[in-house]
Length: 342
Image (cartoon, rainbow, N blue to C red; front, side):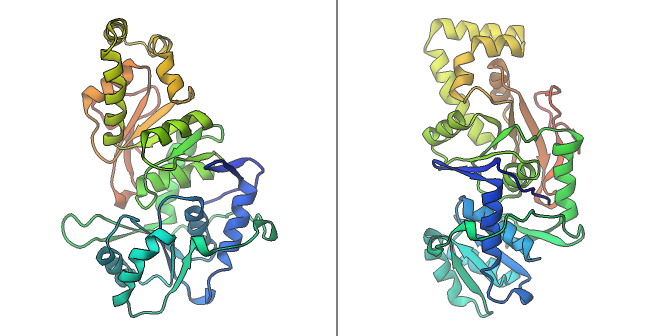
């Protein structure tokens, strides 16, 4: 997956703007951390969302290794199972996740190297901003472990070709992602939906990633407002929580309540955006698409967002499809539908 060198901002983390050039230099440094590069076939990332997660991920591809993201909320037994199953030679983690990892490693017998993000001290300026180039399309790019609801978690092997198909669908065939549309990074990157939707696809077109520090509403709103986010990637539960807060405030005002009813009757996005301008400004004023996946969105929730003047792009997919099977085309949102085939 290509990432080009550029002075443009790639990642916003806390109060830091990290350019594409700087990000690529960090990735270049991370590629030097592998103690036995010639034999590295897989690397694992066991950490919460942070810039180092991105650096570790692409360092794996740079070193021709398959990347195995692990849920940072997983138990030591779950982590141990995954490590024993796929045996990654390099394991990246944070100070926080290292506590769980130490217990998980008690029953690991193969040779591995642990790299703790918080222990790394270096200057990115000493490294090269080398672009990420296209890889062999048939090579396994990532192994994504399922939740294990029908038994032990299964490692889903996705090739670069699988990922290209998804990225091309939303970056080139239907240009939802562009370099000018900033993307909110909120959901955990170990899932294929946010991995593709909030990291791989937007970085491939030169977009800016705005990392929310947490799932707390204050952090989300602050990130949206400071970074003029255009694309939000979420799951139904997130949108249900957002909608609940908005509708509660609307119902507390007689005038707003009646305008909300009127907006549903008129069914005009332009009218709704004008009437509920304050709501849009609360989200930073630049949101173009709210993308929803992971489960079916409640139709009443969808209707309320439409009445507020937002456009939601729903989709259907599964990990094995990397993940999209269908998705809604812009300006063709039909409530209750998961869109058209990729």
